[in-house]
Structure formats: structure tokens, C-alpha cells
Length: 495
Image 1 (cartoon, rainbow, N blue to C red):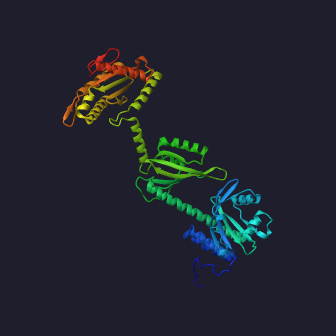
Image 2: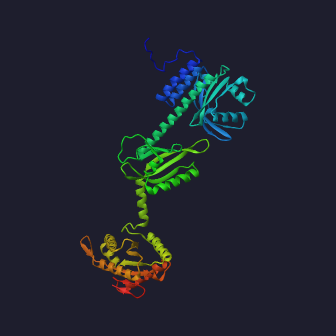
């Protein structure tokens, strides 16, 4: 005997309509289409047609469940096959995204049954008088079978079979076979969701570098697509890690905050999206900033089963955030601390001095005759002069000294752990350095000098205003006594 071969498209076409063999072959043909051919939605339409012809019913339909509350249910009539035009219901206003009240006990039980994944069959003339029988008779339905379509353990919709010609009692075998058809629809829904997610992720990857990830609470395993894990793009399949391995890919300073944030998220409202910025090591050991975004999927008991989402490369955003932070506390012309941060740091110096019993000194200084430089040679020359003064100061100061521009040509210098005598020495050194270091702008050489006022908290000055007032008054003394010198309110005027 030779080998017979064939394909599922023609299998069972000769079987008698309404037979289990015809139904089984119709399901087999549709399974091939749904898994490797047309898919969603064309494959579903073909499945309904095949099931309708195989069972001999008047109409095969799918209601999608949109929302269910304690009082209402919203559904949409999404698919239909009708044996003849007179059986067609798809497109009727009453079945287009319709909402019904769940107030009748028998209707409520029907909804609860479908939520549990239970099939239901009805022979209309065997029903007790009431709402359900009236509804069936109005639609001229003599018998009906409904099979819930469950997707990820949730009632996604209902596969229904209406017979307007026969009071047909479905057998257990037929119900089992048609339940298999429900699984095919469920699989088609999942495949469509996955396809949609892939399209969305493809669009997302065109907009920003990103990876998808998932953590399984049962196994403790994490899988992640490779895009952000490699410094150089390589064709690599999704990667699986243990939680221990994954944590070692995160910067040590970010591990504990991440675990703490996840714990707080799981203890709180998991309906919200989880977000966390962290630094991630690539396979080459490079660090990149990523944003971890995800949410949970829970079981029927409300316990989380999966935490999944995407990783987005945020290096550009972090660079911009750093730039904005620097601009908020940095003088844009000279690059030193601005007045806002200076006032904040001065208060910190005072608080530390009070708590620890230490001392510090504040110097106020400005450029002598700076307005003349601006008026004679323009603001560009003045700007160059300000940067020149800052360069000299930074070359003379210690690592922990804080230089700030507080406006125009006025500067402040905070000297931590520095008494008045040492501060005077530092101030004199700055005066000599500025006086002996001219700068050139265009074809001109410019000589500048500075005047300094000094205030020390050795007298336990406790407010910024007190220190600033004394330093400013001392600066005024230096100006009044000839400029290019340092002054204190104790009568010390030094060149």
C-alpha cells in the first residue's frame, strides 16, 4: 500500500454535516489557519464559518466582554457567521457596544457562570416562562449553546451557537469539541496581543533604545531582551538570569534603593506603574542610565505572579538633568557657584560651626574700577575680566574653599576651618596674584586689582545676615582707604 498524503484544507469535506467527524475536521483545519496562516481576525471569521457549516446551526457568534461590574455588563458583538441573511444580527444597533443591567437573578447567574468558565446550553421550549424565554423567542432562537472564551484565566468573551430551526440538545462530545474551538480563539487573542505588543515595542525602539523584561515570582527568574545589555548591538536571543545575577548587573549604590522601592510598590497600590531610575552595567562593563518601568500580574488570590515591563535608555535625559542642576547652582558666565547656592552653603557652614564648635571665614571682594573697564572697552572685555579673576582665584584656593559670584563684579569666598589670621594671609595672596597678572583682550593689556572685606565667625555670629553685613562693611572700608587691599572691622587694613 502506498503512502497517502494531504493537507487539512480538504480533510473531512465529505463528512456528513452535523457529524462529530465533520466538526473535528473543521476544528483541525481552522487550527492550522489560526496558528500559521490568517490569524486574527480573518482566521476567526473562517473558524466561525467552518463551525457553522459543520454543526448545521443558523448562526455562530462572538460577544467580547468589555467590562463587568456588580450592576452592569458591557459587551460588543464582534464576530458572526450566519447560514442565511435572515439570521444575520451583526451590525444591529442593539448589539453594538451595548450595556445591560445585571438585575435579574437568572441573568446574574448566567454572568457568574461564564466568569467561572462554564458552558451553557438552552432549549427554549423547555425553559420556564420568564425573561430568558421571552428573550430567546423574540430572537426566534429554538436552541443555543454558549462557551466562554477564557484568556489568561479571565472571561474575554463568549462563543455562541444559535439554532433557529431545531430544538437541538448538544451532546457532551460536541460540547468538548467546541470547547476546543474556544481554546483556538483564546490562542488567537493572545497571538494578536503579542503581535500588537511587538508592533508597539518596535515603534518604541525606533523612538528610544529599550529592552523588555519580566520577573517570575515563582521561579525567581528574570528574562530580558538584549538591546540594553550589550555595548555593541549583537543578534542575541532573550537572556535569562537569576535574581542574584540580575542584581549584580546593577550599580551597587542602586541595588538597595531598587529592592526597597519594589517592596514598597508591592505593599502599596500595584495598579499604578512602577518606575525606577538606575545604572546598569553592560556586557563590556560600561554603565548606562536606564528607567525601569513595569507593573504586576496577580493570580486569583491577588498575589503577584509576574512583574514585567520595559527598560528605557535615559542617558540623554540624565545629561540634561545634570545640566539643569548645574545651571540652577552655577553662574553661567564664570562657572563658579551662584548666589542661590552660596546662601544655602553659608547657612550650612553656620549650622556646622554651631554644632561642632568650628570656625570659618567669609571674604567679600569686588574688582576695582570695573565699571570703567566695561564703559571703555565693552561688556565683552568685562566678561573676559571676570573669567580672568575667577581663574586666578581657583589657582590660589584650597580644595574645600567655596568661591561664588553673587552679582556683577562681586564675589564671595567661604574658607572652612579658617581663622582670621589665615584668612588674611589667603586674602593678601589673592590681591598680589590679581595685581601681578594682567590679561589681554583684543589688542589691549588690562591690569586689575581687587578689594576684600573679611568677616570671621570667631565671635560666634549665628546668622548669614550678620556675617554678610560685617564682610560688606569691611569691603566698604577697603574701598574707602584706597582699594587694592583687605580690611576687617577690627581696624586692620592690609595691602
